[in-house]
Length: 253
Image (cartoon, rainbow, N blue to C red; front, side, top):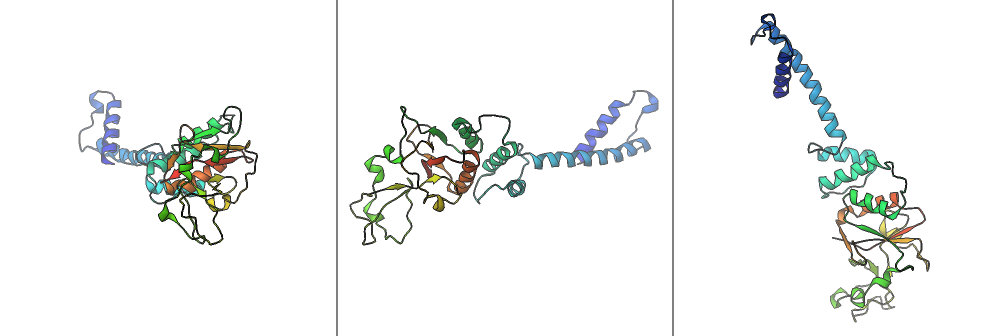
């Protein structure tokens, strides 16, 4: 405060003519008057600056408390452990949405918005060499393999990093031959933020209305902080056309 006040007072002195009648001795009546005015002006200036710093997540003074307040106002899902920088990106994206770009349902626009929110992911149209693919088309046998120490009872909930649910036999236990039979891809975004609900969505045999969110090239898996999974799903639901389904080739780790 005192530094701002002194700068304002110094500027005011420079604006006066240099004649003797306008001389402002230190501690004199004129200097005291202008110092008092500078005090109120400095308060107004710093209050305005603080408001701008709190409103816009584009500066180093935007705090975690500011981020929490904006997430509450904008309805952004956030979890403990997410960096302030990622939170600021998500807030800035929501404040600017939908900007002025017309092709908002184009896959490159969706990709741009996801990356602007701090997610290191890429969007791929499900159109490879003129035909659509299923997630299983991209998998090698090794990627559908479980280790022997991963045998689980059917009552347990098991999610691999590759996000598959294995069908099990009547003895309620996965086969110990380390191979999943009848795998079903469940890491999709159709209608819900809750992944467990969307995992029951039946895509069917027509994959023309699906698209992939993955690494830079297919079928590379992207890496996303697991604490941002729901935030990512919420953003995908906001961006994607309502009739489409996103197939996530993402490891949450």
